[in-house]
Image (cartoon, rainbow, N blue to C red; front, top):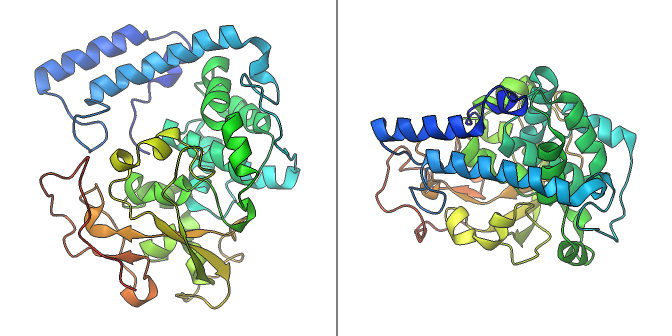
Length: 346
């Protein structure tokens, strides 16, 4: 979440050309060598320079698409003419989302950063936007308008185009979600999975959500564990048109994107806490999740990052997190096709 060039405002206002950015990135790689943009090796997404070029091409794709989509880009059904979604316009839910009071630390950190700085990383924007649409069920245009009012790098094609193209579900997803018990747990699984690798020390989250700084990192990432317990184990490895995960790549490229993830999670229900903590209480010190959370199973030995903060609570209190004895040891061969040897401790 701290990655990115931070050049988007200059690109948005024409102060910097996309061609110059690509040229300079390629020149840097010629002099210093190519680096991975994803920590998974120079594979599907290529080097950092190649990834940057791809993202700038997508920026142009949205610009030209906006011309073709016309005013449908700003209508409730979007450019794909979505129907059958029971949109809500709950102002209290919307207020909590805008202020970063959802009870999901990764979402709250992003929304608070946006309010304070006018910036949020692309990855974070997608996550917060999907939570508004897929979990809160609010009219996606409310979110797009809020981003428009806050972003320093706003352009209609990039902002509204990303909401309509990446976040607004396709007709096939509307059909599958209609048959799924959405109210049982958070459906944008990225909000609980992405912090494990994209904010592995929790530095960014704790900067913007200081209420959690006194907790162990495990609990700061999953504060609902202080007053709830796992009640039901579910499979989160998705299938095509799965109602879980908003990012299409997460559904169709699981073996590449999430080779490190066991693929299961536990629905957390209010009750006797797995692990309480002195001087911390949900709703008093931090917001209770707006919907039932998930404890996602993690094999720490398989995480695609070398340095992470997880595993700092007693093992008996976190059966969904295991491993970690080899943290900081980089193994050769981890990447596409890597298979976990660790087993979940029951």
